[in-house]
Image (cartoon, rainbow, N blue to C red; front, side, top):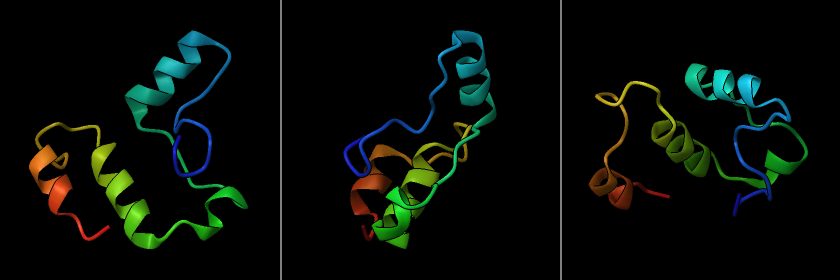
Length: 66
């Protein structure tokens, strides 16, 4: 929300919203994301990884280049 002004998952229908979250269905649409650095997008991708064992930890996130 802080980078572009809206959350990564959104739908007016709560069931569809949950499906998006469970599937990890998000993207970086233009023009809002055009000025966000690749490093920031990389960190977001790593934090939103569905599989907890593959997701970046808080300690790793604090050390991320972004």
